[in-house]
Image (cartoon, rainbow, N blue to C red):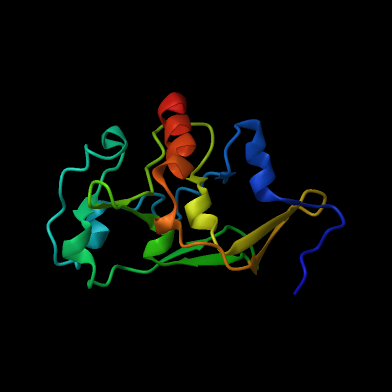
Length: 172
């Protein structure tokens, strides 16, 4: 299916204001599911977390030794957007874990949104990989489509996610 092009704008273009490829979502209602993926969600992972300070100055909350978790199964995460026929994105570890071959760390890249921030979560290019996101400004609708093949985010260098981490530090 081809993307709608009339008044649709790719959501990732919003981020050019920040010179980043990110998507800013509205805060979820208080009754909605938690907006944070806590390390407790990974209790089923049978490996001990390790100190991730060697990667990106310790910006990540949850890291593992990549070799010790290579054969393990991590939880599937589904991002569900608010609305009647809300689209959803099914995520696998290539979308929410970054594997750094230099340090040997594999870290969760979903960071919590600090309290009092006027907007909701920031979704980086790793989460969006393989998905075309089209936002119809006039119709106020988000359409998700399967994108063309892209390199696995875990194979992208840290420099590809460094601007997002820098923005996160500067904003919060």
